[in-house]
Image (cartoon, rainbow, N blue to C red):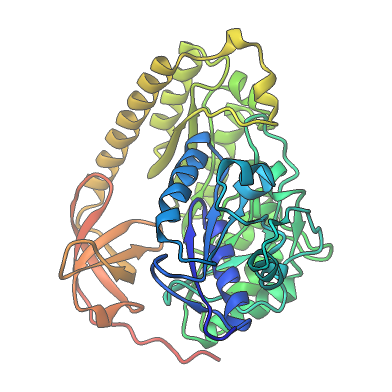
Length: 443
């Protein structure tokens, strides 16, 4: 087995990135070597997203392309949410696929691969409510920050969302186990962790809530920044907000999915809050955490969304002043309640496309005004990686601004102070005003 190679390609959210790290860690323990190209790999795995139809169509197209890279006897597998949703049906969609494995099945991956090698079309798509992947050693993609899954699944039943079907019911990892993983990454010199969950701030392991987790992670020696994604607006209790405000390591940024600025649409989405309650949540967070950066998710073209509903979304974007937003056209997902709305409620694609363009323009205009006002400010940044343009580095402020700075790759992983000198509207350019900040040794 020591000569076997594996190539993993990842689509979708940060949880999928984390799952790919777990997959690679499990296969490394089983003797597999990771390769950076599918050409000639013994095992090719595509870790997938099912949140929108476009994501699934993209994966199906990619699976067709990967067929060209297969060598005789290679195993091609589909993992993740799309695998969970479609199960064995994927074998009919892509005849060369011989392994389908959902997010709760990775512990059995080496055995499933061997079964696929022997000619079986192997599947593992059962939910395991006890699975938190204790004992796995993740093979991390980045040396600067670590994704730490702390909660899996979702008990909210938003009418548009496939996640409860693909990830199962909500369950939280024991606090001590999560903290132990944070301690391990800190010992490796990683100073930033991102706590992951489908509704991460609803975390509760039976004895501890998300406030307890934030405080415990913040106390780990060597950890300098703590982030989390994605929370639900309903689960920002006073305890959680106090823990955010009182734990210096917790960054001044919250990704707070809004989805719509219309209470009528939010009710049809089954988001369980109104426009006013969302605004109140944002206000409480900003009052407790000065300088908080807010980003969000917004869907346009949801069934029944009227021009007036969309106007409310635009006004919410202007009033709240998000730093950035992920914006999408509604995509009907098989098995969700939204597919059962009357067809008369469907928003024509051309109308949804026009609304999306207006939303993006409104979002960018507001962000650009705020970014222009930020020029001249000084921020501590963590240098994350080389930028796409040669000779430059990409860094991140605590409030999640992306800053492009000059510098050598040796600065990656360091903290420096920068002055914001320019903006493209979405990212900043900056100049370094201090030398590297030396970090205390972990532990």
